[in-house]
Length: 432
Image (cartoon, rainbow, N blue to C red; front, side):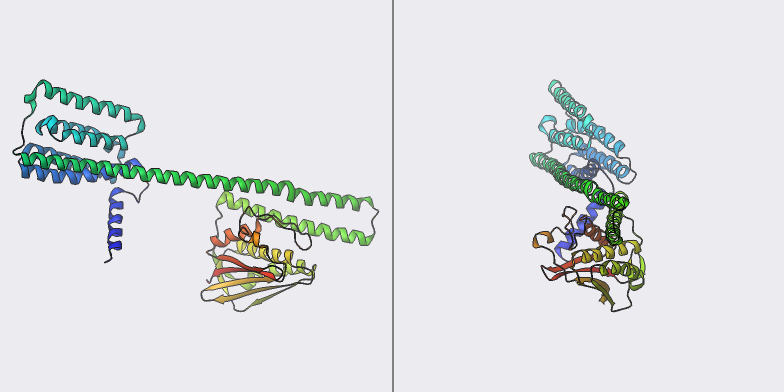
């Protein structure tokens, strides 16, 4: 058994007893840690007091062991954290008061334990109660010291030997610093986690703001522009001064505009659903050829208007595990991008083949390729849209959706490109 595995198992066991695997707040977990230390420390102190001849102190240690064990149990396994913490505060102070008089008073180690107990209570108590805990702890210690000062005979026992006094004091010191060390460590880790969470939230807000700005830009420009063009073209047709040839050109332009706008709205709707509903997916076995054939046929018509040859080749009878709607949205976006950036009389090849236990779909074009400066942000929402070879409009969110929806389907997406030579996009899906 390796050392790393050994310590990993220890951490798992400690995590179970502390309750770290459950939805417990930090104060409760620290209470469990302190309780375990107090239980073990009380048990050891009980045996130590018996060994050095302090029978009464051994009874106090035994009482702390039994009571703290019970309080830990009802907190950890019964969910009564508040009651356990409150009772612990009273129990520790009362038993330490008894221990003060039977363990040499101000000369003994009891004041060290009062410091540790206050730190313990301060960490696990609600902040609104902290001032009362401080006042209570200070007053109780003051009363004990004053009582001993007025009547020294209240001390009921003495150490049987000088060695016993030093052993007991040092052991108490070890218990005290162990409690402080553990509590401080938990607080520091909590601070680091909180700080990390705040940084992550700040980054998330920054990203949301960018997406919001992008969305408003799309709505204000990319939707308004095609609507303005449609309005302009309809006015020209309504004027009645156009020849049949001119009307045909305008009709084709209107068709292109409405198609681009429809694609834009589809992507926007999917993106909105992704933000609001966390995109629930319906993964099921899908026959690739049958399911994407209609999408390819539809986009082949669009490609033909630019003189582009869109061919496809399915090397195997492939059945993948995917979501039907998301698969078609991804394929449509990838093919539409290929058509957009491929020049007149260009070529696009759609290939689906099996590679081990994956289905890899590739869409290769001989277009202008992706500029170097845009490659690193191609799948980001912040990327700027580019005009196609026929001035086709885009929104810059299609590839972002493709990446997000591929991840939701346990898929992968990547590309290879060379400026002036073309681009190949790859989609990898698990075989059903």
